[in-house]
Length: 139
Ligand SMILES: [Zn+2]
Image (cartoon, rainbow, N blue to C red; front, side, top):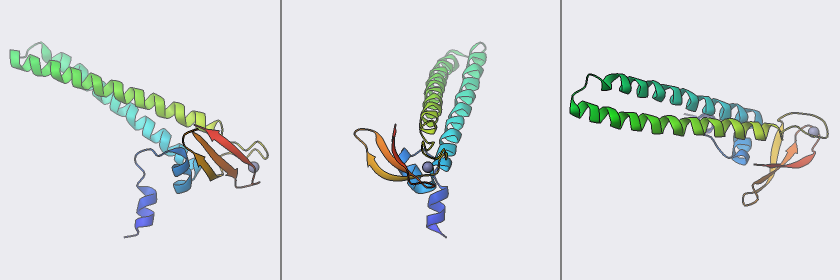
């Protein structure tokens, strides 16, 4: 089994910008951020459906069943809110990074190399692969 290839394709969860660019390039990183965001949207919708089903089951249930329904409603609401919040964060973050990924010197979009990383300042120094222009992306 080729572990380096597996490693490149196994990015299911999101990665910080610099690590993502180093591993798969900016465009793939951006695409995966958007996909992860939409997976969270699907999770939010599914948990919302489960929440509605719990409300529906509440009417004819025995007292213990009603207690379980209330518990299930609370769990589904928490999951739905968390997933919706995560969806909005991932989409906003991907959009903010994409708006800074165009080279101001040549206009090339998303063909970047990481040249430096300043985590406390949340700056990622990048270099255009086409013209070698350098700038910093603020995350
Ligand atoms: Zn350029």
